[in-house]
Image (cartoon, rainbow, N blue to C red; front, side, top):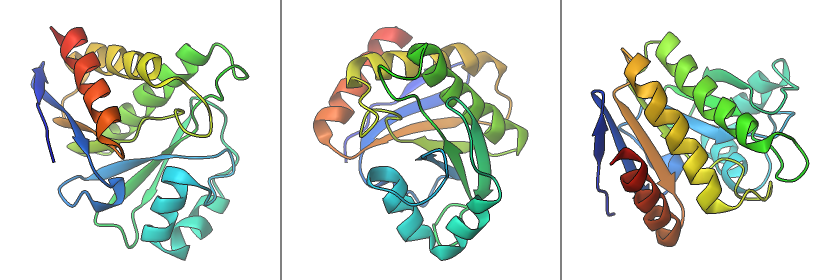
Length: 180
């Protein structure tokens, strides 16, 4: 597990290769949710499977959500106390996709901040089945989060957990360039 952290305004940014459902040191992880907040493929399927059936039952009353929005639940059987569910834009359909994707990251971190959580883990939102190209998505994510870091009082760690090492390397490269 390789990680090169970047500090900005007292917030640590990390990019690691790993399993987002196995981040025992994070207060909250972010689910790349569908509008109905139900189990699906990819990140959403893995998070729902690891959290257990109570997560889907809790999410039923919160759905549907629209692109860019974020809601929070307990983590149930996950090692994390909470899950923030974000609906990213479907690339080429939900427009303006860059603004909606930025809203996901901004709303998730502001929700964690409001809840007094200190550490948050993100997948690469919208880059799987929703088709957002990885590098432009990473640029939107880090531009948004680096700009927001000066407003954060509680959140001290923002970690990107990428399934593939090539995706981790790409995110690390984008983070280093934008933070520099």
